[in-house]
Image 1 (cartoon, rainbow, N blue to C red):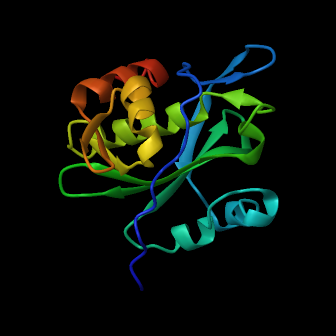
Image 2: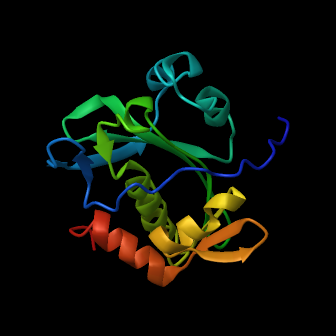
Length: 177
């Protein structure tokens, strides 16, 4: 299988919430994160407003694609993340909010933060002390430093270390210590 080029991530952390939050009402909803299925792939297409080719991402053998859903509503995907377990950290290949969770008319805030916090949690579970890395678009380097506590490692490489990871995990997964 051909190696894909690194994609610079350009997700924006709209708000760090303790789950996801309805933008209009302010109501907070508990979330689940699980592996995406072949059935899910039929709905997360460019035709349906998704930016990335998630079918192609799903086919990458070294990567796992996870979906964020609201508890008791597994059919509506709020966002997706593609992760690869490396020897000493977790690498985020792609992060995307559902089309209805983007822009001025978004339904829920906190989706990207929730997905990034999950990647940190996974990095702890895999024995990598919460360390996560990703490749950022240059104009968002400072944004990720400010919102996620990520460190700029040089070029456009960003790293979320143990301390920043714990802050995100405590925010999104406070009951899962």
